[in-house]
Image (cartoon, rainbow, N blue to C red):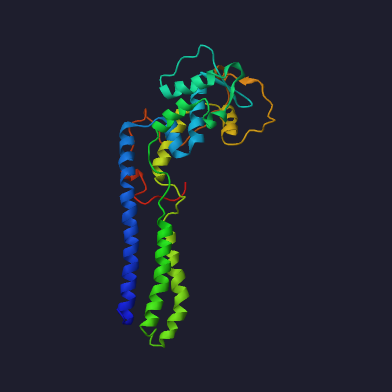
Length: 287
């Protein structure tokens, strides 16, 4: 390995083998996720669980609250206070029933939307939400960190090896390898960008399907109600916020509704094929 061509070839082969091993590791780690995604597409997924997969627990809580409002089981005030509608029909879904029971316990004064995110008083609801989560990892592996380490090692070790072996650099003095040290160091390390960052989302197509499932279930809700709930779910509520404003009656909703793109939902069934709608074994870029 101490000849010029042999040294370069073997180090480059080792560099490629390390990246191949990273790809294989990511592929193996993603196998369980692909099986889960295939099963979900065959059996369907509820809108609350779908919203949580496509976003986070705030999206799950938002979707559950809006579903109750759409079913006219809950009213929301302009300040984001939720109150149960008297004599409202009991939801068929036990998870939604637990959420409605939690809102009922607050009585006529209502409960702030963000209190649901605190989980206090809504433990049963969140227990069922967590139990229905798809179990698909949302973020990529630490493959970029590993690839960056491989690049640094090869970028430093290959010129150092050539220098110690006194391999000529394009026929020149072996000390010219010192000038090749830093460029090769950065070049090999820069290849780490081809791998997803550990904070990037996996399975973009699956997340898109989940978002479409949640949006389809909420079709028909006017923007006014969505905006009131969104303002309290995704933004902190000021402690000085004035309470007791007029309520938005679900039975008297008017105005335009949002139009959502994406494929239509057919009761949770009819999802696409297995890994064709996933991003492969090593994660995807950010949403």
